[in-house]
Picture (cartoon, one colour):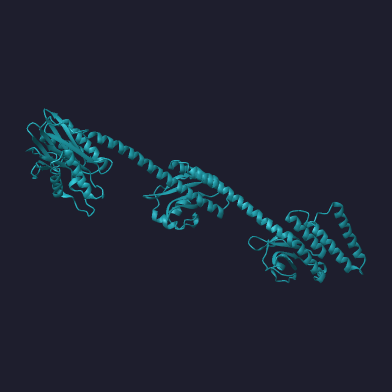
Length: 592
């Protein structure tokens, strides 16, 4: 049956019996041994009652100690129990000398034993007797008693009483120890759950898509609120080194010179949080110490330190526990992940803006190309331009000049991409404005002076400009440093048109010569950029002028559109999927 606490009447009866037995024992020496046994039985009943009363551990042990000291007539006593570190800590005491240590350093005893002068427990605690409290072959506590009345030694029956007491209190003490462990484990688990909830909330906040500056402010706020500190700073590594990017509570003026990255990497080889005073001597430790920051938490990406989250001392003065360090490290990981995501998001947004701008630029550039070939008596024209990137620096155009005249233009700006396309647009507009108003050489000379005055050094344009008189079948042209066009006669002979001068934008007062040719029926003029002649094969060989001539001879006899398509196909076949490294532009003029 389970034990129950005694009712007040029953407790009173037990006390009355005990007092009667004590009085009777004093009156009768002859029955003393029997009466002492009865007294010890009553004490054990009282002890059992105290153990089942549901009191606190301190109250229960005080009662146990009082019963044992009274029964064995000891002047002092103490109960030492096993602590979390495995040592024996003082749980309850009565009559110990002042200044007695709060722990017992003697090895655990296995049976009641008498202590002599020189023993630690005897000299420091005034104890003369130790009795182990054993549970499951392990000493979980020790009962110690001081000097006994009259200096008597412990008898056999008294030793049996002590063993009985030890057996009675062993199970409750063990239960108390287990309950304490469970309570501490529950407390730690509650703290962990709280921290996990906090980390979950932090993760949710940090992944909400805030900009980088907002995330930096949020990290500082979260750290200060979680650890209850009044100072916090965030340092990030940049091209010049480690610099302060966000802080709160640092009231003194701080140095702004970045800390060299090499020193930061060397000082924080261990990615775990460290006290600032434990950092190697150097600029990093001095800066953090001057700012009164106590804990340095590295922000790590792979094996490289990308920043430091520095935390000040707690307002309560309590040190950071191991759990605090783990939480700080988790916060640092989340903070760096959020900052990196914000940076990547900025890169993605910038790339999207750039793509939109390039698409608009491409649409504008495509609008500059002539929409469809003109209707010419005795001639046909076809043209195509393929930029290497979204936009390019090549251009082709045909400009009606009236009275059966047509201007043909093919240009190639040095470089590729957006800068080249902008310069090409300027040259395109200039030629459109002057074509037909001046002689071909004067048009080119004015364009050269315009580009020289408005372009950086090293920027130039190669351009082939021609004016066709369809009635006389005469072509007047100026070649400004461009790839000489291929004039393929009906019989297969090829002539290169190179009369002109230097590329545009290089020399301010360059003079240009005008060349003239007459186009017989069946002749074809192929005006191309170096994206055709310098197309590379997978083996790093150029297509070259000879192969272009051979392709044009093979394609002659068809329409201008067919010749253009065949030439572009020959370039693609030569590259064999390698891709273009330059813009490709070709314009075909065929005399019917």
